Amino acid sequence: MQSVKEKLSDMAAMRKAKAEAKAEEQEEKDLAKARIEVAKEMRKAKEAEAQVEHHLAKAGQKAEKELAKPHPYHQNLDNPSPNPFPNTMDGHQMHHTDRGSGAPPMEGLTEPRLTREFPPATNQQI
Image (cartoon, rainbow, N blue to C red; front, side):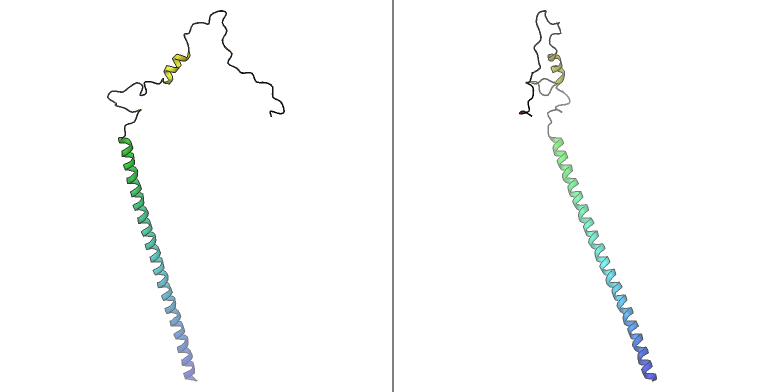
């Protein structure tokens, strides 16, 4: 009877040791998975950072290229032109030409009507 009790006791101890070993192995696997995930995220972060740097460099190059181009509104600053498009009138010049001579209208002349009269709306037109 003693040997049966010892065998049962040994079997229980073996099951306990086996369960502990299995739990420890599972913890190590989980830790390894977590390390792999951290490594993947670090790699992705480094790649994203490299892309950002690349795009910033490209944007800087495009900005430099654009600033190097001559712009019609910003010509030579040492000899600025008052109107970069001399054949067109700016708002100030148009203001002076719209006013006319400033003299009062002559008697007997009427100003032309600028309104247009429309026929009354009917149900067919609506």
